[in-house]
Amino acid sequence: MKVLIAVTHLLGSGHLSRALTLGCAFARKGHDVVLISGGFAVPQLDTHGVDVRNLPRLRSDGTNFTRLLTDVGDVADDAYLAARSQAMVDILHAVKPDVLITELFPFGRRVLRHEFLTLLRAARALPKRLLICCSIRDILAPPSKPEKVEKTDIILSDFYDAVLVHSDFRTTRLEASWPVSKALEAKLIYTGYVAPPAAGAGTDRFGEGEILVSAGGGTVGTPIFRTAIEAARKITNRRWRLLVGGSDSATRIAQLMQDDPPENVIFEPARPDFRQMLYHASASVSMCGYNTALDILQAGTPAVLIPFDDGNEVEQTLRAESLANLPGFSVLRSAELTGPKLVRSIEDVINAPPRSRKTADFDGATKTVEFIEARLETFV
Image (spheres, rainbow, N blue to C red):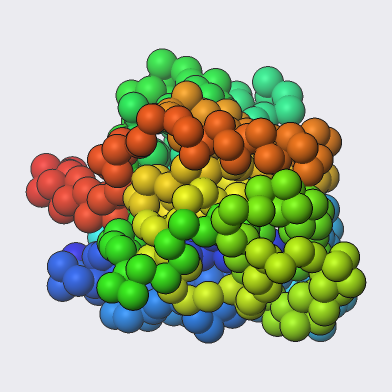
């Protein structure tokens, strides 16, 4: 089976990471996988067994997803975008896939609507009918207007055979962020979460009893770290480990040290064994991106979630609210983030009943492959 996956990540790397996890799962089953990547390179991600083909690269201008920039920082013009569309069609014709998967579109990436529709039309024009699927995470950006829902349903009706929702319907259903019509409901396949295998506890039990604070790379996490320093002055019987991500972590750590942190606070750059440390920590304090949420769920760690909500972003807030129904989770909005409130939230989650590590299904990549293999056997 030949599988073609099309994805463009414009800000973080989560979309590409999830698409590659799917691609690697297909490759492990012996299928040929080509992934079209329209965003900037993320070299640390696993591409084993996946043939990655890069388009002329794009990124958003911060959280302004309507302003697209090239790899040299110029605004992408019509010629640049047309070259991307043509490259996608050329790859389609060269690969001749049995399955086409578009990541997020048509539920998102509407700014790239033209290139995705060009790809879909070319796919439907091939002599052999393809199985066409959309791959989406658990939470979407809710539509701002009813027309967006209607247009999405039309595209799904015209081109798509299935919508793969990478979530466990027991924890988060698509209705939490997107209106589900009867036509859409008929296409939905809940695969379980697309996550790497659980990390498991570390043999050195590193991080045992600690409060782990993480907030990805970039300055958006600075308020979380500063509030954690304040809270550490109140919870003095535990060690706080602040893991600062990004290529400028050393500079940011130096800036945070100016807050005169107490002796029970340790600063480090983000660690590769973070997922193992979660199994031993007393609590986690973090934002609520897809991958972070899965790491916490797999480890069963008590967690305070501070969802990223800059630029009218609501994805992390909706995800955090859905997880708040489970034991050992507390949600703090960024506007409510203070030292005393963080202290209370940490005490609440530590004292909550333990949460089972089997709360959700994390084998979404394997189940996606199994679904598509079975569907192709009867596909006409």
